[in-house]
Length: 185
Picture 1 (cartoon, helix red, strand yellow):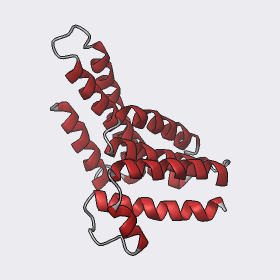
Picture 2 (picture 1 turned 180 degrees about the vertical axis):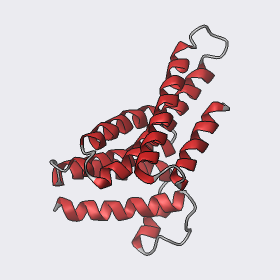
Picture 3 (picture 1 turned 135 degrees about the vertical axis):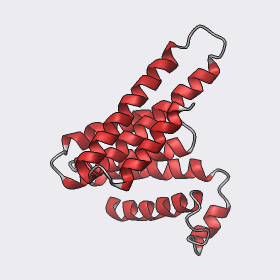
């Protein structure tokens, strides 16, 4: 059943993400540890797992807008971690749209700043890539537009975070740090 498969994929994705971010080197055990040893690119594997999780979410709970938004955010984050900002932008925008339609639901409101932060980081990363590709060329307008969109997304993420968590919440610091990192590029 899709629900059982989805739960197994979520557990696998959590283990992959934890190992990628250095949270724990010993979190994978048994068959999962052997499977991870065979992975050439764990970031690509995480993207695959998140893609499959989104597909299963669409099958298992097609009417649960929050779950679809959550799966889209997680896939966007996986793409961003894998260095693929273009698909991350697309999925983060979809997640933002889905979560905004569920604004009355507390879980959606709490996840919206994360979706907006992921969107902002993806836009900034794509702008940086475009800017580097266009060095010395006259076509810098696309990168500038993306930087402006990223700044707007950072602002929206900060606003949503302050609305949900309050002005002094640590999550606001994460958003401000990302914004500052974009500004110094």
